[in-house]
Image (cartoon, rainbow, N blue to C red; front, side):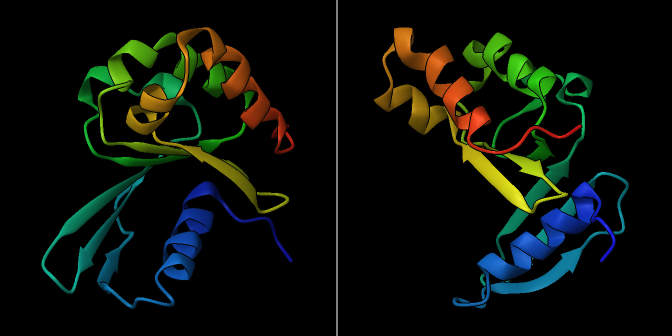
Length: 134
């Protein structure tokens, strides 16, 4: 089986997560690095697929769901930009597409339940729970 791209993995994951509730009406993955979801209740979601988080301006992140590769440079970006992200309702999923493994973090929730001193070690532990993409 061929390795999935980050966008293919994200699309499959979105569909998988909806199998029980069946809330998705339409998935538009025709955009370059975005997947737009229209739910049956009229709500919309935006999923950004970005292999390199350094391409994202953290000031533009509000409620997006972001998928990225599980690479040290992406985790470093998360830690570096934590203060800009900690009050957003975003979710960032770090993915190893070769092994179909992932971990996710919601900065707002994580900030509420984690001591400042435990932030870096905690994020690094999550990162190490999934094989790094090469």
